[in-house]
Amino acid sequence: MKRLLTTTFIAAILITGTANVFAQSSDYQIKKNYEERYTDLKSSIEEAMTVNEIDSLKGEIEDFEYYNEDHEKLLNNALYPDSFEGSIAELNQRARAAEHKLLIIENQDEKLASLTSELNSYKSEIANLNSRTDSLRNAIVASEQSESDLSNLVERYRKSMEERDEFVLNMIDSLFITYKDMQGQALAEFSEENGSRALQQQDNPLELIQSVIEENIQILKSDDGSLQTEDYLRMYVVQSRFSEVWNQIGDDLTRIYAGDKANQWENNIEGKLNDWRASASKNMWASMDTYLEENNVDLGAFDNNESFYTAIDTFISNATDASREKVVTEENYKDFQTFYDFWNGKIKSDWGRFVQEGEVLTMTQISNIDNEMMTWRDEAKPKSFLIPILFGISLLTIVGLIIVVARR
Amino acid sequence: MRPQKLIPIILLTSIVMAGTACKTFVVKNVNYAHQIESVLTPDEDGTVNDVRHGISFNVQPFQKKEFGENNSTHIKEVRLIRNEEGFYFITANQFKNVYVMQPESGSLKLVKKIKVSETGISEPAFNMRDGIVQLVKIETNEILSLNENGIQKNDNDIKEEQS
Image (cartoon, rainbow over all chains, first blue to last red; front, side):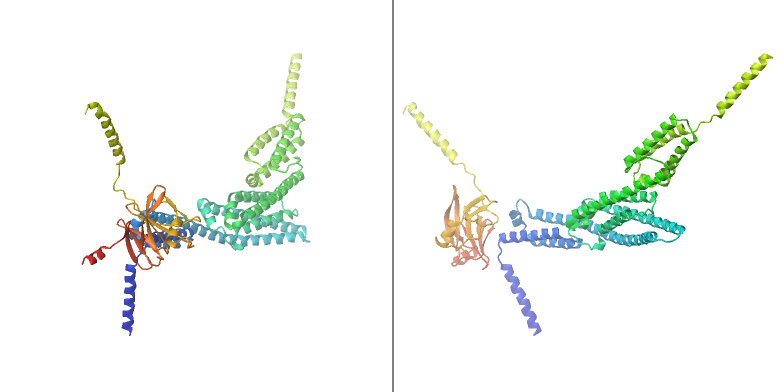
């Protein structure tokens, strides 16, 4: 029975095979089939999402070429001005180009995955720092403790803010380096391929960036005076750096992560960045003004880098002129000394890093002020009258002696 | 005959000979063959346009000839191939005939109507094999070699007839 079945099966195959041998085909149909399969392969190459898919398609192109080799002459005629060989070469070229592109994209995808995990760790660290800062701030506000305990709380709060700001700076620098590496054609292709990429919210760096900005705005707006000028300068620098990095990678980030809503996200974050900048700037300049007032230095009004430089410049010029015109006293020199301490001790030393990084004053402006300070110092320095007096006494003594000697 | 009388005759003969020489300028061994058939879809007016081979004509005369004046059968595709001699072979689905057409100035003139089916071929196709137009009836796997005079007999058939 089994043998009969096998025989029947083989006979069926032979009959089918024979029928195929004698089956007549139309040249036009061969051409049409070729063109249809060619178009299919071309579409599959364009739509391939992985290198594995492309590898498999390369095998299919090989088979396609092999099965059509017998019709090469016919296809050369039918495909004119293209040729069979030319069309296969084009398919292979397309496959190679797609493979190259997908390799880059897969590489970028790996980078994005590692960045996502990095972002998640940033996120939890920032949450910890925020929570610590918030609880310290709340403790300060609600504090009924002694002055020394309160001072201790404020100090801890400031330290916590400093750590948080350092962390945000590191995070934004890391984001910048990672995305800068990905820029260029490959990123554009990646964005095209993943235009509608639906990332989960917790993976989205835009969410993290937005929450960092919002948290900073909130801290600045709910300022209760616990922070000092140095803190506001640091926050101003963090904001400047954040804006700078956003200007360079914001477009790419929104393109990758926001898909169709890229513009909406970009406008939203830029609006918040402006708000942050305004608050950071306002608090920093106000704090600087308060510090100067407390130290009896009246620079006049300033609320930005340019007006701050002009105020210092005018203040020193006026003080120098005053020192030149008035009789030099210890009082004049004390004014100089107070400003000198502010300039050298605070602007150039304690706050130096933030003044430079935040471009509160440029290096050229600092150098100009240094020169003016030297002139002011020369003019303000009290002059000693002891030597002229001694000289006069000596002269009178000599003249007296000469007269005495002459009379004798 | 005086020589003066011969001059007009010589002149006339020269003119006739020159004219004849111009008329007989012929390039021989021209191959008009299409290597592959064209399958053309008529537009709403029934006009087909073979861009590759540079020919355009209306299929309605074929439709009328094949199906009659009042028949409303619609031709979806026309198949066309040209042999080495320059004759066009035209047919379509459900046609019983292949029309052999000779190109003339602004027209195609019927040279031969070759009957290839009693009921109309459902899947016709032309192939060009060794310079000869073949009509393939896909549904029956039948092949007919055609020329402008009609169906060519296969070598095997000729041998059978001779024996």
